Length: 307
Image 1: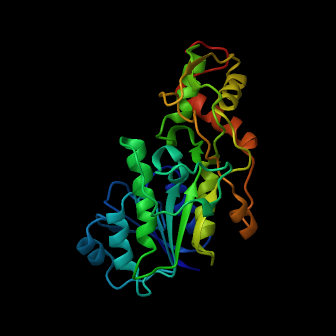
Image 2 (image 1 turned 135 degrees about the vertical axis):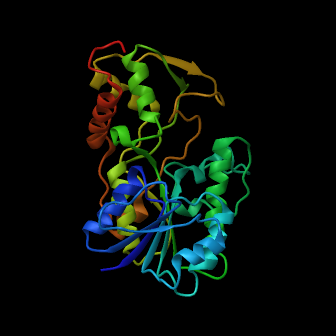
């Protein structure tokens, strides 16, 4: 049994991660700002993770075999955590990062990734570019990863997750619902001409991956993605197949704004490192129909209906 702290963990796959760890026999504690109570049998600490004094006070003298950080978005948050948990307070530190750290649209330089992209492609300290929420999110995650690699050091793992799908009402992002609702209503889906394939992972699969990473011994960045990248057209056609509706498309130019998961640049994930370390991923086309069904049921969109 390990003593594991989950920072965040109050919704979507974070909550499933907490129950997986609990059910595996670990002593699990959730730390958040008190927005939601943890599942039964899970401890709770309340603090703003970005407030170093409050975080130290909440933790007291406790130490953990592993910390899984679900809500680290900035280098400032990472710096606080690194200072607080260094010196043996965390046997290993697992940060939930994102495949967006590889996005060439948010990185300086003219070295585009060769998809599928492996962990070695990215130096987290590589300068970013661009403005707006997407660029700020990617840059925040990159700089947070870089901060964790500073001193004082921690045994650190950055899990660069693919796009998470599934969960029906638990999926607060609305990205899969975008396709279900538009295709169900006969509305066009905005896509790039020649859109590149991207990577996905099921919400339960990423929770299982994080639990596996928390109890492992490896360190460094690791990509987490189901086998089988899909283009936006592939995704829309699968949604259409489920709904019994043929998708309609509206093409947008390169650089234009399109529907979620339509990309005019390559950076699908290579999951070889995780696979070699022993994690068995599923295949996107095996679990996606169930995710579409859960989303359609929650949205009230039935087969062959127009809305």
